[in-house]
Length: 134
Ligand SMILES: O=c1ccn([C@H]2C[C@H](O)[C@@H](CO)O2)c(=O)[nH]1
Ligand SMILES: [Zn+2]
Image (cartoon, protein in one colour):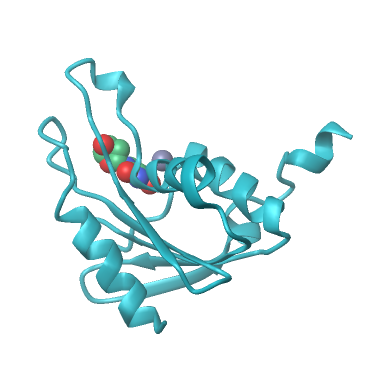
């Protein structure tokens, strides 16, 4: 799975976005250690504050259906002029999945003409995670 393939999967997910209120279509594609890819898109609501982010939808799909191992890589696409970075809540939600499998995934923050690659630990330093409860 190349970065380009993962980005294409995120873009395909964004094409299914339900975002009639913000018109801001986000796609996320999560690559797991067994090579499988799970996608998510943002799902908004007439009660605006209930919007679900693309990354969180993808993590919920994985943990409720088919978690098979560590989180290797994530691609996130948005419609803005700059590469999109996961919001704070999504960083925490992604960290839970990463910690479960013991990885520090690359996050591909995708813009129209550039990709910024950062580690999750760079986006969420000093994270609170499962081990913090011990
Ligand atoms: O990382 C992010 C940031 C925002 N959104 C969604 C939430 C909302 O539907 C829209 C505008 O904030 O974008 C995501 O899905 N992921
Ligand atoms: Zn988010």
